[in-house]
Image 1 (cartoon, rainbow, N blue to C red):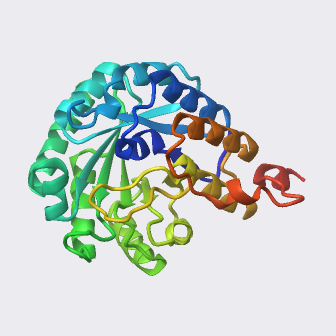
Image 2 (spheres, one colour):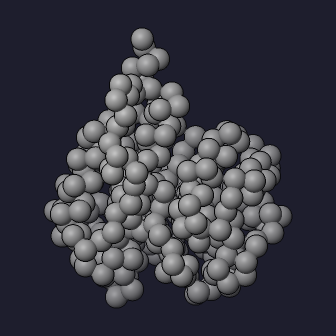
Length: 311
C-alpha cells in the first residue's frame, strides 16, 4: 500500500519497558498481529537486553519469532550494543535500532559508556551487519537530541556531529528522538533542518514524547522539514525512566487521525486501531492510556485520506 508517511509502533518496547506488570508473550503477539492488520507497517517489538535489566523482555526471542511470521510487517528491535545486535542478527529481525545519547551524561546513565565508546560499538555493529547473509536495516538513534533532563539544552552542532558520524559508520537511516519531552516546534525545525542538510539522502525519522503537550505539534514541524517516518505508541504508552513526570510517546491513534484528517495517507484503519487499544487495556488494566480519539471518537462524516483522494 502506498503511504505518504509511516507511523511506527514502539509501545511494545518503549512502552512496556516502564511497565512493572509482565505482559504475556501471546498477548504481545496478539497486539502485534492486530495492529499490523489495522495497517501499521512497522513495529519495534522488543529490546535485546539482559532480562535482569528489563524482565519485560525475557521473551524477546519468542516475540521476535512470532512477529516475523506476520506477513508484510517490518519487525524492528532496539539494541544498546554489539551483543544485542548479534542477537538480532541470529533471530533474523528486519531492522536493528541502535541508540546512543547526544548528551554524555545521559549516555553514561542509560548505557554506562561514553558517547565515543557507543559510536565505536556502532561501527563494529555495522561491520557485523554488512557481513551477515540476511543483512538487516541498521538505524542509528540519537537520544536526547532535543534536550536532556541532566544537561538541559543540547547543542545542535553536537546532534549534527553524531548524526554524520553514525551515517559515516554505516547507518541505513537515522532517528532523532525527543527522549525527555523538552522539544518545541521551533527547536524541531532547527535540529532536523541542520541534520537533513548534512546527511544527504539518508532517511531521517522522528520520535516524540508528549510530556509537555507538544508532541503532535512537533510531528507537524518535522513533517514540514520533510520527515516521513514517525514513532508513536498505542494509547501513548511509555515514558523515559530518566525523565521525571514523563508520559509516553505521542499517541498512535491521535497521530494517525490528525494526519488522515489532513489528507496524509498513513495506511491505517482508525476503527481497527481503536479496537486494538481495547486489547492493550485488557492486558494492562492498571495502565493509564492517553488519547483524544479514543475519548471522543471519529467526527461525523470523517473520510480517510486514501478515500478522499480517490473521490
